[in-house]
Length: 292
Image 1: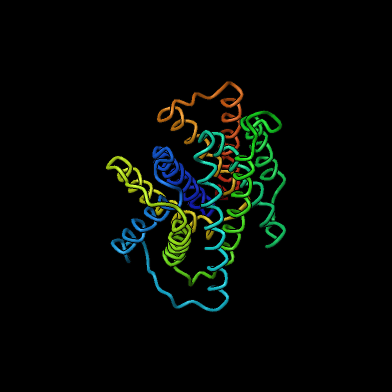
Image 2: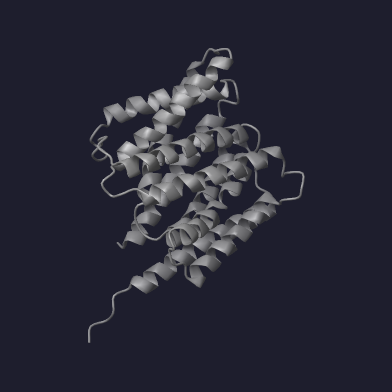
């Protein structure tokens, strides 16, 4: 497989993992305070990293000054994204929140073109715009469904864009597991400090199961998201972020009973078609020439 196809698989895997994490987190229904939940999830994720040490690839802290700076920027962006995203998650339907985050292919691709001068062909850029139009069918800005929690989701989009672009600039000598560990430690440390301002609430067995599952899925999502931004072209890989919306629609209906309206289903179909078209274009452009 080409680097682009590998990157697309990483992206689809990370989207599935993140949406499963979101679903498990949302099932707590706000019974566990936000920062307490993030703190507990982080502790479990750190434990899993220690158990899996070396099994998902090398991990060390021997980084150059430039890489440490990028890891710090990425970790700070991860903290911001976690806070704004999870806050919005408890206050709006999963599918609507995930739909807003589907603007990321556009923001990340534009960022890569502006910051890194990465070439973006008109077909790829058009596919991203078409997919974004499908997202607008779901979000329907200007209606009652677009509120302050939607703004929280848009702020999360900004932080994730910064996170992904900083990951892109890391040198190849930096292990993906080191970056993953830094992200988990940053969110957990921030949550540990922030939760001191709220009373500690008891956690039921059901919620422990949900938080543990969320910790597992978010760890996989973190790792694959790092891998995603280190292979292939951002402009090709970005549209496959839209697959997260399909997962959100399915799980939102199956777990929470949020049945999508026709316009939402139409938008999801456009989003899916965008990814399929991009995949078709990659296979066509990388097909080997026939022998003479």
